[in-house]
Image (cartoon, rainbow, N blue to C red):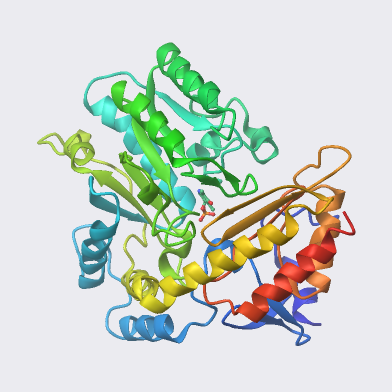
Length: 423
Ligand SMILES: *Cc1c(COP(=O)(O)O)cnc(C)c1O
């Protein structure tokens, strides 16, 4: 039996209807932007393996840092103990996150980073003796698959089985072009009609919704409305963080600062699962008390795992190198060139680019569902042609590792252009 056959005996895959989907592709090796399967077929990873891998597969610099840490101190509990990798990572992150962010809390993945932020928003008001229990979120948001994160997420078929079991969430429209005022008004109304504790958002780009983009000025306005009304703001930078939008964080485009920020995905360069939620001093202070009941009773066994911290430190060093910053500019320019070339194609309705993110929408007769027929045809076509892209309905997006070569990028563009003929 090959790996794919052995897989089907015992394994259950994410977001997969096993009865109707094709068997998974068994990958045996990765290097740079490339992956190879067990039949030695080569693939270009044009979505950085779900947005986690900016610096390339099997990156030696990060691997060496991990090895060194593994053979020095692989793990120690973080309750009552600390260690240098966590301290140094916190110091380095505080230099680059929005300047009001002062405290760093570790967890394991994007969903838990969000879970922590939502729990903190709710307990912040509880600790102050105020009853605020509603969270505000965008339509079509994606914040993860644990319960509070799922409650805040608006992609309905992900969450339909659990309706009625969620914390209270009010949903407002995303301030995309032409819809800004409606979004501001909906936020003001949501705050007026509910006891809102927090507003969670994916800053500037909604990844899972299909790289839906909106302007920083609009987000600034939404944050100001929250600030005026004592509603905490949570920037979920799990997807956008660490260079994707062209700046280190999407919030770097803003004038206002969020009260909390969630980080994961590219944090460790796609090597070790790790996440961080950051907070203002003011939020931390609402938990700082003689009374033990005011503490944040949340923790995960692998909190601040030293090996993960070492991987994050090495990743940060790579991101901040001039070589990687040049890559960000190079890929953005390349995307803008492809956008110019493709935007007038008769099958294309809209295109959008921010940083290393490119997206286009394909004209369809009827509205295409998330995992519809066109989507599956496109996906199969890309795989056949050795390019890993996962369209969202009729939206095709590219989010390459920053080290992808110009030649590889051109091949991705060519395959995307050819795919328009099957749509
Ligand atoms: C992927 C993602 C999450 C969830 O992260 P997981 O590590 O998959 O739990 C949360 N928020 C955003 C914006 C994401 O893109």
